[in-house]
Image 1 (cartoon, helix red, strand yellow):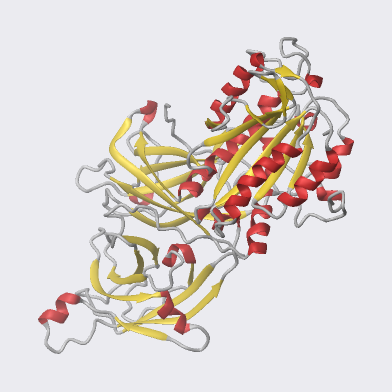
Image 2 (cartoon, rainbow, N blue to C red):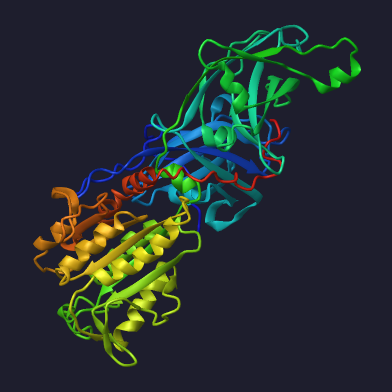
Length: 568
């Protein structure tokens, strides 16, 4: 795809994405903030005498226009930069948030230009892709889809917000070595997480304190995932440098610690480490240290959120169930709700694609179960209420949303629309798979069932019973009413106006059903439907795992670039 770049357009406040439109059935989206760390490799060298001085611009698409959200610091004379700047964006599960990263060669006081000669490459992706994969590495492109040499950009995501797990740290140093001839050192501190393969991931880089051998750095916050990957004993490497404007910083010293050790600084206590230069330790007989680094204060707060579970590896498994009852009309007739118009998708397809495109970013194998109900199916043409629309009883999964669409279109000529509108069998079928998942006692897979129907369900008592049973399992149910039927009775299944109960009076453990008539979104953009019906899912996921007391799985850190942790 051609990559267009240029003036970023109007600036938006840092961290702001598209605000979800309110919908009549659901509250605004559960909001989290995601922090994105950026590094590049093998950037083009645009400077004649020195190397490029790269800077990254983050843009977000809003109403079809790209708006600049924020930009990184400039790293002098470096073709493999690891940027300390953390981009913070608002995250909404229920919508596609398109991002663009543009890398430019900066020119000192002139700042970042937008001319072709300054452009080092760009890359586009979605917030959902980064969150689901935790680490995304892609090539950089110039204009018209041309590769920017061997240049690549890597984005690593972590969640951070006022209500989620993060730690606040305050460091200072004392009596650091003086590396400058005519003045004192200009020290800054870097913290690296050491991953299982011994590679290093930059966690944070402080500001530079000019001309000071006993600097006090500003307190800062980092997410617990970012700092130690949920492992308190994971080793951390802390390095103190003397800043050099040409990018050739002088090494002062280093020390190793763990988050477990850092926690001794909570309250009135302080923790300190000798800042050591290994070369001096070997060469100098009476060498003690190159200064001391002190952790003045540490504050920590832990609360699990939806993103904790997603970033911990929890997969969203998406199943769609389609109503093939006779009330839809003969698919060969243009008045039918199942009519396949080559120029305009029907309401079933519109709803399927709108919701499915969101869910697919959170399913690693991109395979989706696709079921039908209310039709007579070959070979015996008996009525079925839970058949695979690909007619493979051993594997009802389709390859991606497009695979579901193709299976839907190909099955229509092979079946006879019939009835009644029974959905309890499909709810129970998905619930059985969810029950198997629950027995693992891990937050590894959550199930979303999308039911598309043109009328009120016939088996209301059985459906209520099935929903109550499902409310104890890792699953949510979305029902979209297609066509112009009176769906008043369907509101019973949506617990917004009261607690849904089984025929015997047993209440649901938690509200897992969202019902909306498609006609309310007929004139809206496809994303409006997805925003509305998926808005409650993050809350439902957290409620389930909180009730079960299943913490997020602690993921292995994303496979790192072996040079990602090398100092600038």
